[in-house]
Length: 516
Ligand code: SF4
Image (cartoon, rainbow, N blue to C red; front, side):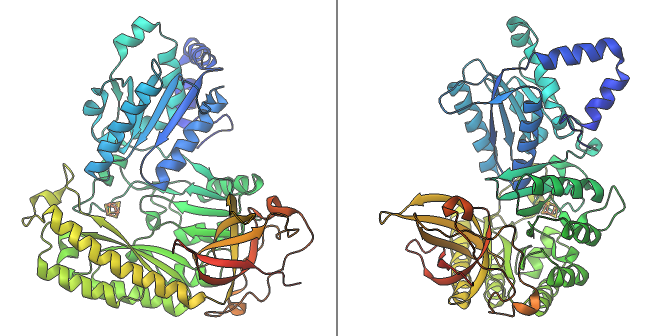
């Protein structure tokens, strides 16, 4: 639980039990942070971004400002990722870059790389403190204690690491990060109990755990009060929600759907075996859950799925996709695929590719298998060469491109609700460009004359499913009204008629429809 002052339950409990003297020492140390400046750097997934945002809020509550461009920070906080060897290396590069840019700053490193390789990370030049997953919620206090030390003492204490054995990680750090004031990322779950053979996440993030439905609804209400229109539910294995509270994922969805002001929810990613028919049916008729799913498949070969210790086969996966299509025909379905897993022979890859070609999904997110220390996959014979991985990855990417193209093309000429994001740039013709996504996750670019008097509706809702059949329009939605200019359009949900592809080929051009 996070309290209003931004500090974790563990931290406050520690204070309560640590005696008056220590409380004063803590408060005094925190006071020492007042007026300091910090810089934050995040690598990896949405979960990490959400958690960095919480750390930032906690630091702000302790009086720490975020550095502006050109300023030198007193504190650097790097939230690392360790999903691949490349992610580890990016973490090291970030530390080195920040060290040069902010000389003398206290360098704090947290995140998956820090939890998995604390000794290695602590030994890096310039690193003062390595904070593991269990201690993440207490970063302001740890920083305050270190900053309170004399420079000589600080130097002596450098390269320290505070981590807990992964098996003992228990805390759930609540996080709800705001991305550009339009989309919020709400962490509903953390950790994973699945232990897929290629994956290092269970070793970095610990067992599956979650926030309570009541606390998550409160966070969603706060996001709505701050003007958020869309919330992306994030976690490591979201469908496994409920391990710590005994609650059900479907009940979380039902409760969130009731939150006033939030017009859209998306589930960032859900394991196919946990995407139940009940969840799909609920999303199909819910007020605010969008027709959009992200489902990890990882391989289109049963043999490789078996080597990966995934909990389903290709038949189950295909049936799951068909089930989604049955209830929500217009759903955008993104699917994760790993190529070049140990044991993926040419023959198995060809089989997998054929399966992927035939699957009625909208896009593939392709990842090359990366060897991770400590994972069971290292015992599997049949290493795939980097060139072969690259070649396979290109093949799946080209299938993905085709699928995405086909999916977008279906909706050209239709009107869909679009949540418009901040204006990004002005075109040479004096038009403003706004980007956004339709309910079914089509990227849209709208050009609005800069002197346009249009104003979008406030917190619009997605049309009822009956009013929005496959390839249907936007009956039932309110149109545009009054005047207000571009600022009134950003962060609103408006009906947009979808046109042809834009020049870059990464979005459809759209025209805002005034249905009045
Ligand atoms: S489900 Fe498998 S791949 Fe996903 S986080 Fe858990 S162990 Fe890793």
